[in-house]
Amino acid sequence: MSMIPSIFGRRSNIFDPFSLEVWDPFEGFPFPQRSEVPSSSEMSSFAHAKVDWKETPTAHIFKADVPGLKKEEVKVEVEDGRILQISGERNREHEQKTDTWHRVERSSGKFARRFRLPENAKANEVKAAMEDGVLTVTVPKEEVKRPDIKSIQISG
Image (cartoon, rainbow, N blue to C red):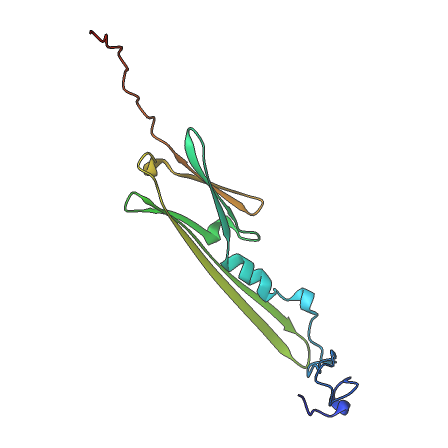
């Protein structure tokens, strides 16, 4: 329970622990509105980038949702010939200056996803493309040669 007097905020009853009005110590300061600053949920969603893996008859297709990222901030690598790694890093800086104050807010986030490719994946022919915040990685598949099936006469 807060014992902060009501002169510091709009709390209607300082003795009511269920009061929904919360004292904001920065209320009235010339700081930017929350909408102007990158939110922690935006950085959190980046850190938990979603990746979908779809197998088609000719390729394995990975789609990573990385909104707001540039292709220079994303890396696609194949390790040991069988591990596909998709990683990225974002660093943001928001700066504001006036005659009386200077404010800089920094945020950053990283993500990495690793996938073991199946035996039929052509890891040396990986292609990647970025469009509208979606990274698409295509790993072609080797053609499966099916053995010839011969009919055998059963004698009896």
